[in-house]
Length: 284
Image 1 (spheres, rainbow, N blue to C red):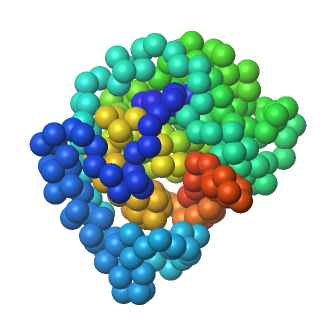
Image 2 (cartoon, rainbow, N blue to C red):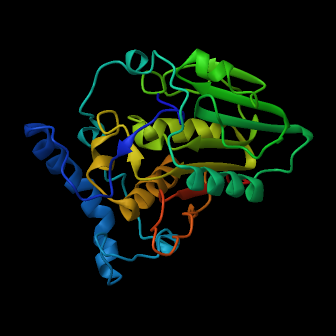
């Protein structure tokens, strides 16, 4: 599965149709069902997913989730269903989000990850690449990377080890149970075609109380992002990722933090940035 190194174009959140011909209509049809289940509760709260301003940090607070996972296999189709190993075969040593969003994510990690320099701490960066956005100089006993391109992973100087694997082919994580204090995924959750299986694996490899952080913006490779992502906006994305935590089981109630950089007067803002996160339950 693609990592955070690659350049991209704006995907969901713009409200604009992609010029993919008849496929666009198909994507809208399949995504409306699952999103409708989730967003219906927003209407009950007198807000709308298309509203100009939504307090996304409150969306997941005591959210009334449906009894069953509301999405279907069709919601995870992509315009380009070719093998991801081919798409990511060539290394891309560029960043996926702008400097302001990178700085915000790095600060979020600094505020929430275990303190640097602890030999008994283990971090896993999935969908990793040549940069993990960890604070400069951050060290731990283990910082493992799992990604799609070997050259990109080799260039990531913060990793202590790495493995190349396509989680869309095989969503199992090649690590032991209760191995990591934190599992990170920077701007790649929108490419997961088997998200529940991946999140169940994240829960398995986390230590009790361990932290999982899924960060995302409104940029992506639209041909490789799942249908439910490209046809929805930022508030919907918060709910979608929150639903992965909820239905995977074994996690505490997910939370959202809007870490978007402040907008500059007269110049507008850069990339929006969100972190949806949870901890593995400390007891069974």
